[in-house]
Amino acid sequence: MSNKPLTFTITKQLTGTLARTGIIKTPHGDIKTPAFIVGGTQATVKTLSPEQVTQLGGQSILVNSYHLMLRPGVELIHKAGGIHRFMNFHGPFFSDSGGFQVFSLGMAYKKGIDITSHSKKGDAAQAINTKSQLTKVDDDGVHFRSHLDGSKLFITPEMSMDFQHKIGADIHMCFDELISPLASRENIKKATDRTHIWAKRCLDRHNQLNIQHIACGEDVQALYGVVQGGRQEDLRKGSAEYLGKCDFDGYGIGGVFEPEEISSTVKWVNDILPINKPRHLLGMGSQPADLFLGVEYGIDTFDCVAPTRQARNGALFTHSGRINIKNSCFAQDFSPIDVECDCYTCKNFTRAYIRHLFMANEILGLTLASIHNERFVVGTVDKIRDSITDSSFFEYKKSFLEKYYGVDRACDFESSGQK
Ligand SMILES: [Zn+2]
Image (cartoon, rainbow, N blue to C red):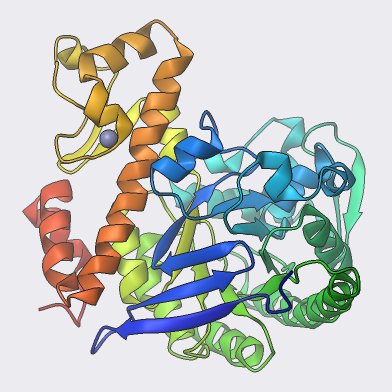
């Protein structure tokens, strides 16, 4: 049993930038940062066993309380002994508050729209702009409909904390009001102010629940405040200042939709948030460049379901750019997906074989592709971590991006601090 939910130690700060390496210690083990947190939305990393997640280097998994609240229900997970036992993954877990899904999926059931399947994150912002107008928010909480069966539901910040504690992840997120960056400034301000009031309510409820855990001899759990404020500089900075003064274990940064926002929004926020607390970028984009930019501007952990989703569509990362394994040019290609990759798939199988599995709709193809894509992203962040340690971050960033995007496009991701 641990009475300490989380400690964070910075092991190296990269001079002249916000990039750092560190260790997040939780009751279920350590996370070396920067780290990519593997997406396990519905209490599963799609097509992968927990052993495969560990083998590919995954240190931690993020589950989503909105999905788990609807199915199978948080009581059942609690009865099973919590998420670690339910999933049989015994490393650290993050849980998302469900705020994002309430606003993005909550009203989508009629058309079966899943905004996360849009190819561009700008489309996601537009979809939230449309749907958040249909979701009813008041000071108490959010009224919405289940995307599974259309049933009417209501969730408050306190309920979100109750759900997350029952799920039993190591690190929780405050329930926030997500608003599209396309909304009016007045509405973004209103949502940000409400997010702050809800953050205090989440913290109060969270502290009560931790007292109960201690009384029962159970591990205590950690809570991150979630910074919002759209693309408005003063609102973002105000949100970071307000939440930074509250006693959270760390911070999530929500509502970042485009890679270009990392060098502005994420920097504004991380210049202000307490240095000694970890920062998580919630639901980052699917571009490898986002990993480099995020770390450079002070992000310690990321999560994203894109690597496995893209893998299931046959879109596979390689160090020379992304390929579609279903293309006929790979029919007789007996090389691995990526010669530079050290994953189980690349060590043992060829492009021709994986293409065959996809063409024949064989399930193994999805698993092999997911192992590769997940390893590619996890491994890239591991190398970024090493490059901070030996101060070669900018050299690594330049060589990776030039190879992945080509020399011309790589320039788009340069920063003022880059040599
Ligand atoms: Zn591989």
